[in-house]
Length: 67
Image (tube, rainbow, N blue to C red):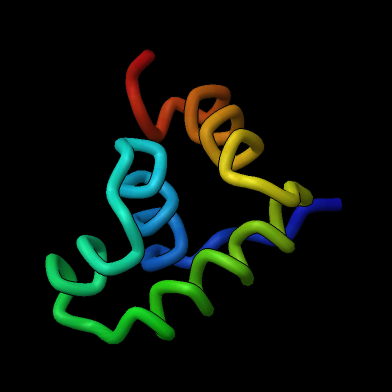
């Protein structure tokens, strides 16, 4: 069973799926790059994916982003 994503994890997944880099996300959200990486990693574990392609598939499937 998948664990629920936090609001910040969803926000970061959306930005990654839109093509933003970790540094761009960190700058936009005014957090550190390491914090972005931590949220991304936890989100990926929760949704069961191992790469950015999996994140994008998840974001499309869950309607977090438009195709």
